[in-house]
Length: 292
Length: 271
Image (cartoon, rainbow over all chains, first blue to last red; front, side):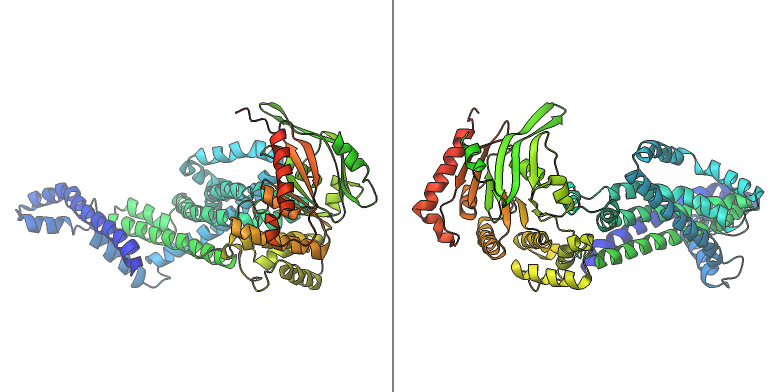
């Protein structure tokens, strides 16, 4: 009951406000085109009828929420998942490269963090480059990666996954450096009094201490991975995936399709972040975390 | 120096810790800080030695030098005839910190097992030692609990169990009960004394509480600050068997008075 009052009601209130603003915006943004149509057809609709028309255009400037919802519902639940028009199909294409890129990125991020924590030379040299790597606009890098890899015969899932990797290794590397350095001086002294080796200190102290940091950064990384996968789909010639769907919608002015694809992407992102959070909670629980 | 004469006569086979002209200067951003100066001290097997003094008198630093957590810049220190580094590598001591310093992701029993895992003891022996030390600190039944499920006093007992599981003859304790309330502290002091009598370990105990030092120790080392040095070494005349109410006895109060005098003499009340 408290959960409903404290969590769900506030979130739903904001959602309702957003939907209301969206409807108002849709009316205003679609009005000029509708007025144009009416003038040419020689019609003079009343206010209510006019508003109704602005919210039901086939290719509106700004689709109304119910149009997007209807499109999303039809393309998610009413089509065969193997169909080229199914959002489930496109989501799966994007999800698979997201997951692969996320796995690469997490592994790479952890590897870099371990290196930075244990090798002084890496600590001094690597961090500025890692930060610099994230200041390059991914939209500029992505087509080059795709083109270069295609030239050496690597196509399909891997190039897209690499763009996800590029975006997702960063939060993991930064989070894990912090996590591996999080043990208190007292705990390190304790290991020293046991004459523990560096690898014992690493596995028995640094790694367990870094787990909460790992999951916090993985939440950010998985969302970044999805963005990377979608961006990676844009220059592939719009074959499949949420990115391809967005691009095709833009070509043919299918604004409702674009918005529905956007919703699909958001749903996938939310599911991924929630999933990582849940796994993090389970792991924390199994490591004796105090139930919150 | 009276301290020198007192300790010089006692250098025998049973010396566990021997410090000679020990000094340590930290290089800080504000220039060098002399944390320890000319410390001569011999601690014999089976003794319970307390170090007492104002903050910054180097009592914790001295303990850390014994434990090879700090390196002296002058003089020598030997533990069981070895250098402090060799002693640490031989796992010659157990160290109890100011805070329990338990790993929050391990159960109490796994925490106690940590040093045993690091030494590489076989499982069966680990189990046996865990059981024995948990009994020793009266924590049986709490093996599967996580640290946060225990009170501060119980956590500190678990950390003592962890130091004991090592089975080293020397126990170094750095204000282990400093953060606990007085009732819990009394209780733990009593238990610690019992444990010491039963195990015949050598204990070095840092504290800033006069009653605690007098109640526990066979010898009290009074230290003063800037630079940290030993100003007085007091032999306790109290019997080995010490009920809590011994603290009201004239004998106890006389020793406490001498400790207080020693502290006052070493402490310049300029400010």
